[in-house]
Image (tube, rainbow, N blue to C red; front, top):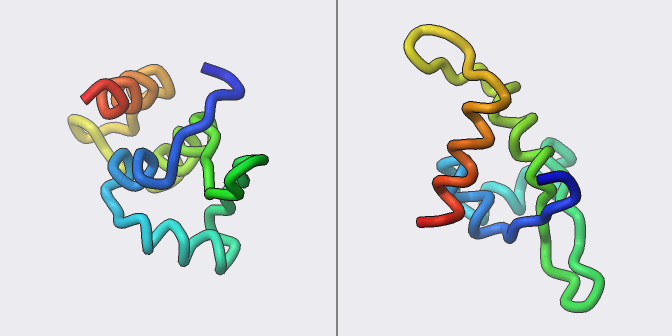
Length: 80
């Protein structure tokens, strides 16, 4: 999954926020986005999305999810 990028819409769906929230986080430096080289649209590395999910402190069954569980969550969201 390394070096894979997702759109702002996909990242927002995975994180449970709106694309506007991600734009604000990017503008404020809280969760910076990369830019697509041709369209200049915001894109996010899957690894960065995993990191922010892990840093949010979301609990699954009263415990922190593993990176593998987070990757499965992301894959499930991307295939929907």
